[in-house]
Image (cartoon, rainbow, N blue to C red; front, side, top):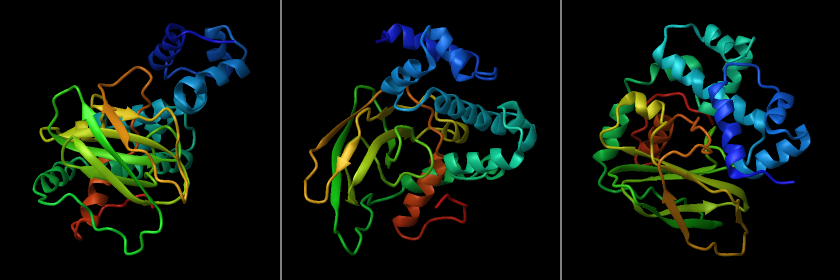
Length: 269
């Protein structure tokens, strides 16, 4: 049983246009005229995550938007996206964004400062670990779109940029990158950009940035050198998952690795 790209695009559009409505699996499968089992399998083949996980990710993205653009309380925002418990909403938001909803709401003033500190860096190569016992992930970031700014690259356990990446780096332009000392495991590479002219809100809600994601997993073995990766950035596509991780958190962590410039901001460990 297969589904066409157009059919899945219609489902993705339906989800995005009805994200505040109840979207149980049976309803989504019915829209595609498949059984829940087959719909879930086909959806995961396209997106890498289940339909309901995708729905919850979009709702958290909506919550980020409301935190910055409304005066609603954190509790009310949680209820708007279907979370009846403040504790559950706060826990899920923190796990997948990297800070609590209240902290996310307060980070806008700091984000431009992090970007300016990155712009002033002379050396973007972070200090290598004392013990280099594992493989390095290397590649080159390219784009057909003109771009000047920061490229954020992370290796995540799922094919969606949420939570802190297991490994990651920042580079100050398109071109080569290296993530050293990556332990054996299965990872998904995600990357996005912040141009030097980006404002605070666009850093916190990166919905229009150049980006990419690896549909196939990157498998790191202890004794095998990885092939060089060609990472092609592109404008947002319909089937790109939302970027949930707070980019200022990643910027702040990188600055800390580059020489103790990290500021006193809570980050997810």
